[in-house]
Image (cartoon, rainbow, N blue to C red):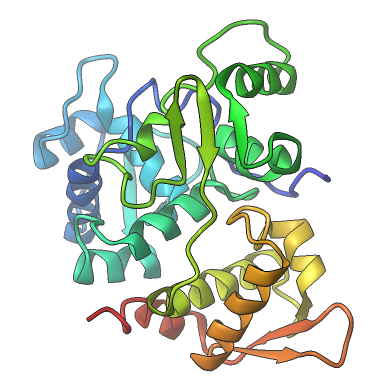
Length: 282
């Protein structure tokens, strides 16, 4: 699989072993919406996210929010003081599901975290590059060995909070993309439900915008090879077709089935698509 061009993924140890606690993600989104900016100490003081003089949870939560596609940082590099802005996804989350309690919010944040362009490197390698080799059920040792070969290191601890993040209610258990029992890790495909249609549609339009900005049509194979639209959610052929039918019914994508592979064309503006992601929640 070719390396993503212009990647800005988070390094493998960005999390400093901290999990993505939703209460702190909420606090960071509120901080971003306030228009304030400052260094990590200022963010900690304003949000209540713990941090110390040289380490703490603020940098990790800031990076989680960025990798999840909830915020963008102005300026270049990982500076000590940066302006934080909400993305269209982050704005609608703060408005409709500020504590990311729903499966919609958690699954979209997870999918973004696996992005080859701007996700987290360990997530990208586990859910995208290594997805076929690992399968849907694998041992913890197998994952550690795979990551060890990927990074050229021979030590444990490379998995970090990857698995635990999907098992704790304070984090992303509603999504539950990974679960572990007796050293065996199970990967759960993203659910294909009516209430997820607008969300998956917005995510796919975002992928097409990010990876193919000069094209008004993208083939299903092109989009998967570049962005993992079906590999990252672990959708087989049957689920792939169901997802596309669902998004098509929502009026977000037009699908040309006369071509092989099928061609996808967005028919909803990107920001408008993000505003619809909770439309089917009762």
